[in-house]
Length: 271
Image (tube, rainbow, N blue to C red):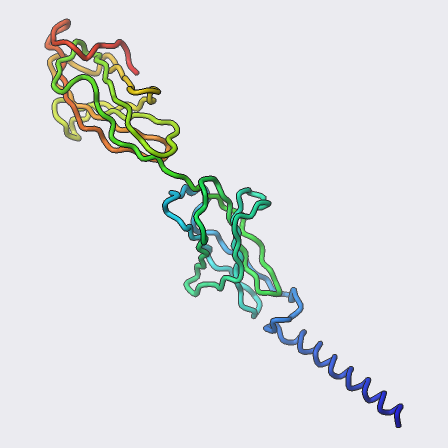
């Protein structure tokens, strides 16, 4: 009798274990399913925003990363993992988030919870279903920067309405005040003939800022004529931003060679 009971007990335990194993392998939606599930393919999400190489004003944070949704041949629901790193190899992860459910619109986003300091970052994403994992999309980069803010430059010379002494007068600009990390600063100069109107635009130049208080530019020979009135203005630019225009000024050229008033010291040649 006791032998029969022990055999029955073994059979009963075997039935229970067998039932558990059948449940695991036959229900792909089970949270405890053993993965990966053969035959399931998960596509790679397409990185959308920000585009690679994007420059993001540090004031426009937090930043939102967006992908075009991936697809799966399986029945398990997908979720996304987003990673942001300070290097292209993702050895230094700045922030990551997983378990993000796909948005039914076809695009899924992750909003970075904190503001990032100025530098270049790399981001990527992949889809996963808890049993199978898709591939990461090739990383995109973006740069967080604090833009420079320029004030309008002040035109120093010639004085308003001044009659210059030659056809190659020196234009003097008081360098524009600015805030933020200005790098390569230049000035755009626009020269108009007779009236300050688009159709009267005569010439434009872009010149490098001279370190210090002022930047100068000598109008090249062959541009101006005798006995004419001209208008000009300037503005500062760097690789990321254009500053506001200065107030315009006018000057006159002498009526004849050697004629005309004082000031506006002539310089030879072009800048």
